[in-house]
Length: 255
Image (cartoon, rainbow, N blue to C red; front, top):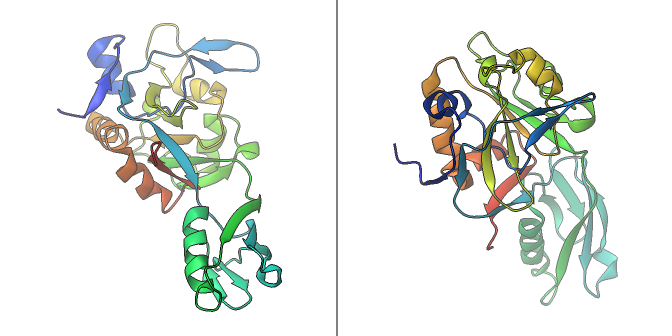
């Protein structure tokens, strides 16, 4: 199978590669933190080629400062309404939800250009929603969850309604983008000697802002598909989730 990935050292080779492929870890963690101890994580399985970064997506409730240079009468702080729109003088209503700040600036520049000469528009976050984590896959309610409500994988999966009967809890995984821009895959390992049970492992696996928790379906082929799609083609597949669950997109670091 050609994944277009940079292959790293594989502990326990085929077994670990199959049981852990479902997780893309976006950060360079080497341990799972607990309140009393630290449990070692297995080494990375794969790392995607290229460097990536997150691009925040505006959502209802966000406070945004809209500034039009030298036109203070239309510059102000606005709150994104529940319907996703903002209201501004001269341009009336503009959809902001689902857009990046760059995209919103482009839309507003075009709208203001109908009334103003070469407007210079900036959109800056004043107050945005809390840090979030995201649960996807074979759970009853895939959703975004405030990080302060779910500090561990177990808490996040529980708030998401728990795993479906088709969910493979032994292969629950964290997806994380590191500060170095590298997309990595590291499992919450539970099937090696000395490692805890799946539920215990999930209860001590600490989360970070923007983590994605993936619960695969029973059947190892799902694990392989997940790695191929999300690590091999993150700009396409991670952003499909971004349109429904996440508060950010993955973009190429060169842009």
